[in-house]
Amino acid sequence: MEKKMTDIIEVNQLVKKFKLRKKSTGIKGLFRPEYRNITAVNKISFNIRKGERVAFIGPNGAGKSTTIKMLSSILYPTSGIARVKGLIPWENRAALSYHIGTVFGQRSQLWYHLPVQDSFALLARIYNINDIAFKRRLAGLVKLFEIRDLLPHPTRSLSLGQRMRCEIVASLLHKPQILFLDEPTIGLDVTAKEIIRNLIKKQALEEDTTLLLTSHDTDDMEKVCERVIIINKGRLIFDDSIAALKKSYLSKKYIEVTTDSGEKIRHVVNTGQKPVKQALDELIRQYHITDITVENPPMEEIIKEIYNRD
Image 1 (cartoon, rainbow, N blue to C red):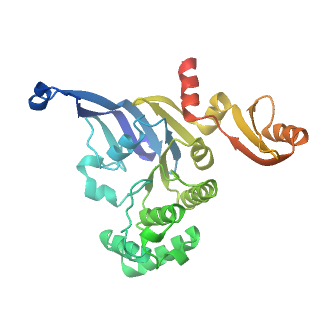
Image 2 (cartoon, helix red, strand yellow; image 1 turned 90 degrees about the vertical axis):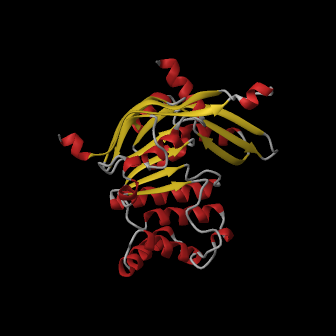
Image 3 (cartoon, one colour; image 1 turned 180 degrees about the vertical axis):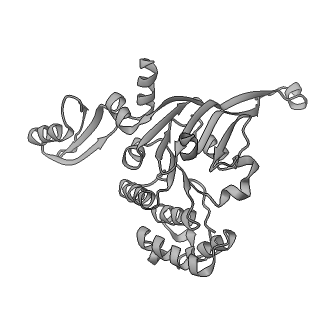
């Protein structure tokens, strides 16, 4: 009973299939089109407790966004069941909207031509937030996300990093208990990504917000979340802590250095045998270096290793 009381998201055997028209160049295909079913999400099950920060990751086309859209009531499933805050999303869209916030990296909830502050005011009306509560809430978020200077500017004039900070503030205005983040750092430069990650984590910790963050970037997972769920081709293939994933599958780092002659040299470091700092110190002694980057293995490589170990 205790487990059910603390689970804020419950997913059981969730399936989503799409019907796609087959390509045809003949007359028959024009008048009698044939269709095929594509299974985007294939019988996945998981539970998330209140306050957990969960990375929901996988390669492009794995089913991440489709799952998020079902949990946030945008899509109906083909079969299976899900409950978010005790509500079945696609049956309780209006009621659920007061408990969740959503950020889609490639879609904006801010009005393109309006000043950001006007978009916030409109969203406050939509969520029935009274003026005093709205002003107090907005003031806190503006300070945390450092967007005061952006408020009078129309959304169209913002950089991508600035817009994403405003998008997250917009999703938090009604103080949701659950935040769905679908690729919030996509297209951002390294500095903007780091800012967004730090702000998301800080806000979640301060308000005990439950996070479900989809991404193809393993740094999003490492720096924001405590647990990771990996899906591939619609199937759940891994569900454990970030620490367990690091121990089993993130034992490599890729280091690329640029020398003063412009040469780029790439090294693979097994972090179980040698700390990254030691590897960097050795490279610095060996070369005259002008730039260094350190990266995790790509998601496709991690998933391939998980499959190979099954």
